[in-house]
Length: 130
Image 1 (cartoon, rainbow, N blue to C red):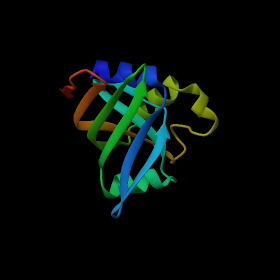
Image 2 (cartoon, rainbow, N blue to C red):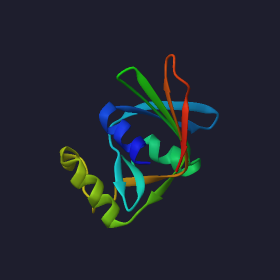
Image 3 (cartoon, one colour):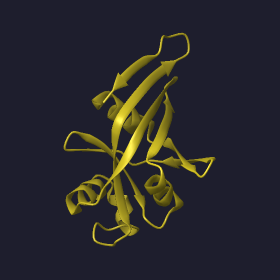
């Protein structure tokens, strides 16, 4: 899991894919945080991403950096605890202009049943489950 976290932090931007009905939706994200041994992402409840994940928690993340890429297939599970939201916002203080752990909008999800595939041209893929 630490290797996945480190890769996503190094990449700075990753792409989160969700499903809306039968249509895939992909958008750039930048938040990843380790809280109590789990990897978390953050969004806002007013965003379509939130409604898509509540309807279908299966998601995939993809990022590319330094000639390598990662794909993480997982379920994203909401954690509505104040502590989880605060930890995420403390890790990304630049978000505090838009979000607050008490605003009723801030939403964090942790990765469950995750499989990360590390890839690079000319190298065998490596798979890590966490």
